[in-house]
Amino acid sequence: MKTPICANCKKNWSWKTTWKQTFTFKQAITCLHCGEKQYITKSSRQKLCLPPMIFALINVPFLSFGVDFFYLSIAYVICIICIFILMPFLYELSNENDALW
Ligand SMILES: [Zn+2]
Figure 1 (tube, rainbow, N blue to C red):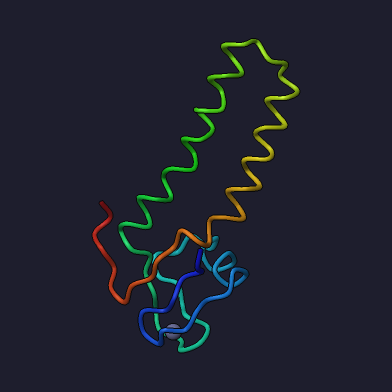
Figure 2: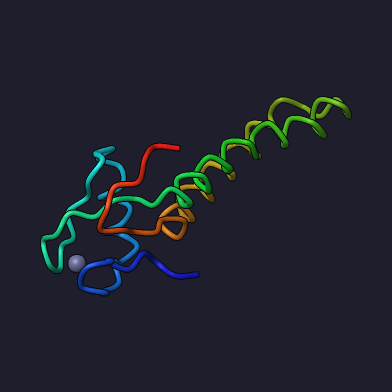
């Protein structure tokens, strides 16, 4: 797994940089190496929609086997942590802003 690469200067963004930049929720993210505006690609935006679906999937075994709510909460917390750690790896950068979908 790789962290995103700037489409302009081809430098790797660190995990920490990516994480910080993406949580600003701005359309354009400024590259810390070259100062150019970078945009998240359409395909990576689509990938980012997948993690929330994991939550729906976790519910299935827990609800059908009547597992204690305590264990369900632990499973949720573990999933949230995993998603936060993995998110920067899902990003791909582009010099141009794609149409939303
Ligand atoms: Zn750059």
